[in-house]
Length: 334
Image 1 (cartoon, rainbow, N blue to C red):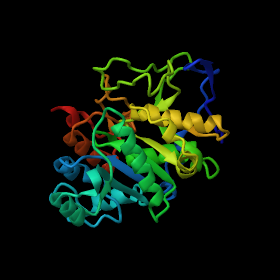
Image 2 (spheres, rainbow, N blue to C red; image 1 turned 90 degrees about the vertical axis):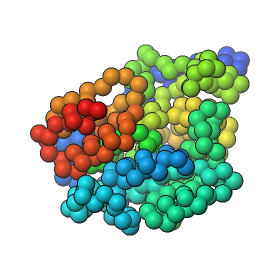
Image 3 (cartoon, one colour; image 1 turned 45 degrees about the vertical axis):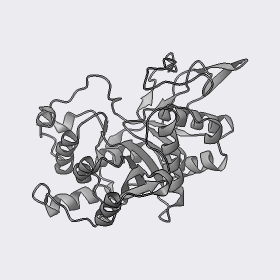
């Protein structure tokens, strides 16, 4: 198996730095075809689905996609998914555990949220403040990583994903199996890579009106290193995540833009001698026009960001059935 790494150099100029790719981008690669009959070998993974206190309706629809063998909730719409469908969903990745990650300010859990947690058993409460700007999302991401490390189950992988992303679970498992092995899984950094080309660079948004605003005093560099897109979801191997936390790398790099912050953390870990296994997963960034027509067998995305709950629920049913000639058009007709 060929395991690839990304190498970047940093040119220092007083407080400003230009981070540029050095040579061609090298990613872990192997045909997915060789892994298609290995569902039983899917690595264990904990998924933090970023949600919020007022997202109960969305969560109720997303549970179709994230149901696992340990989920004990009673389904309110049992006619939508048969018992066979639920078993198939779990068997597609039986050792995947998903929790909806929600900030509860100062550890105070509203009664409605606590009831939902008691009813469904899939909420992760963290002591943080909800929000996007001013680094709040970065702090929430760090809190989710810390919660993952404190879990007794010791899953091999950690995934952070937004609640408006469709994840083709079985296909994601196949991608991981095809692009990692026992030696590289623990140091994996997987997701929708950005930028795609070595002659491109991601530039911080300095406009205060931008939702991606990055103040110069928080991150003075002129460009970001490579990273994975935040919304579609990214995955960290346990060893890589432990390296980030053990070395306290996030503390010195709490960028306001969450996905870029994680990219900087991984970059800094590599600068200190760690070698991450970078895996580019087929997916979208959610801010362009994408191919959402045609047959499921030809559908190009494993991670499809920026969808409404009903789109995700519809695609989840198609993914569970996994019939190559099924059309996806109806999932995006509304």
